[in-house]
Image (cartoon, rainbow, N blue to C red):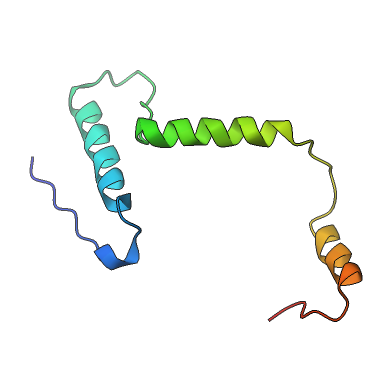
Length: 87
């Protein structure tokens, strides 16, 4: 199997395309040799999974206050009425 990956390197931060292609390779290898009835494996590199888990732990520490989407906009407008609201 020959796989061609064509992308504009300048459009992505360093390492992103390599990580994406690595995930794509792992998926192709899994499809070629894996159990068709098994769940899909984790595709992101382990370093990404570790960062995702750390971010989830950090987010869990902050209480979530339910409020409408526009509430923060109006609170900011009230706190800084002379600042530009939208561009």
